[in-house]
Length: 631
Image (cartoon, rainbow, N blue to C red; front, side, top):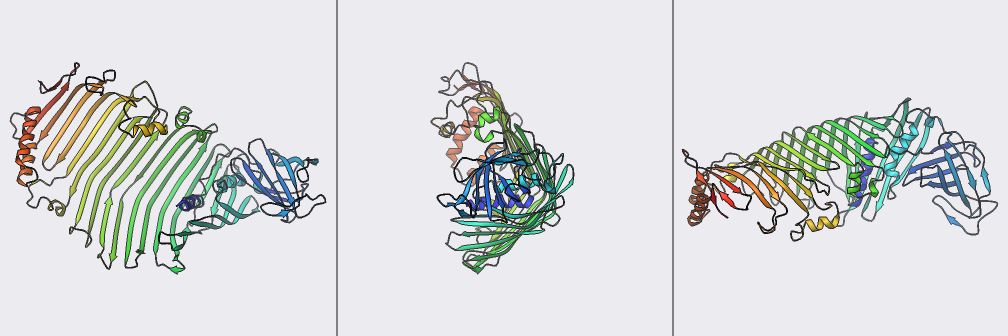
């Protein structure tokens, strides 16, 4: 699956041309240089851990290969030519030439003057030859402006793919006025299990004024994928991406840069698929309309990256045969009102730090994704099973995530869920489930500390209902009320970690119940709400406890709690009666349950089937139920 990941990287980069590292502080020296000691040189550079450059001169017959690992403008490498008056003792293979005519070269690039100076020598002998003065002027597309340039924008955009050693990036550059034109741009990868090729006919990067550069590209480009499937068949797929009118506007400077993009329509279709050379008839059509967004990169040292994205609607239409060739699968889906935002701040040395070090250095990340109405229709037709059909809808949904120095918050909400399944392969005529709302919310400290911090947990399922076909499988006489079910659990408190939870060894120990004790402390816990509503019975609860972490003996290794919990059960006896009538529980078992409820609860006066209970744990460790001592 590695080639799928790399395909995704390439696809994202080409689709929006804005996911490359826009924070490259070092000026890329790519360009066409004239009046140099080697004649005219066309230099192509890309970002790796430093900067790597390949240059061609003497009509493309001779080459230089240099790279820089720092941001001091010093480049070291080799020159190679077809012949020389001082040939080396052995032939050396370079990327573009195999020759005896080569030598070392050390250069310095002066970004302010767009010039080179340096020394060079023959073979591995001392460098006795000098470069005197400028290496030539850059073309118009690289002229110095107060803001970004066409060249710096392309160096940044091309950096994501060019810096990956497993990807091969090619394309020809030309200059027309202030515009840089990239023709036949391709990104290729080939591994043992497959490969891909992305081909864009043309990318035009033009300077609009002293502060903006506009990037446009061909309305249509292709992605070719090759792989071997689980059955050993060679798959060859060509996808077409159409983005007519897609525009990317880049503004700012080398350290603070903004990418604003807009695409009226983005569409991905499958042009062809073959298995072992045999065509496969597949329909794949993904369309996104009204895409508008931006990426922004700010600062050095601590760099902030932010983005926003909105889209009016996304639709997908798929029709494909199954692997056996005896049936087909169809899917149609749509998702409207897509919105997302993202922001992160990280130190330049983020990738060399542990998570704890990064958080202490200012790392933080946050994001949001939301959508409006979602609908889908899925069906299969099979000669053997007859197939099935499924449809569903969601009114809206949202996810939020934030992590900083002290805490993590993660929450989500979905409303108006409807789901149906039917067909010969389903044991019931119709399975139908609906949910009014589902939500969760997690708050927790994430750093090791002796100071208690806030934590919280919310789980909410409201209005969960099922069709009569489902109810009738275990309640054919409708003894149970079929009202929608609800579950709500809302907890808050204070606690702290005694260990680094991001340490892999600590995480492994915490996942083992036998070694997890002692990883953290809970100082307090409040039950804001507990609601369980199902089959005619309602259970409600609230409570508040504090914990003495120095006392691990009163409750056998558990920190001693002090506090109360109040419970209320409505319809509990009625639920037990229905379970007996259906034969789902034996009567003697229910008798024991009623005795336990009588011990822990009391009937509310004036009601037929409402009980309350207060469980209290006192400072001395005694446990009380409605004033009666239990322990």
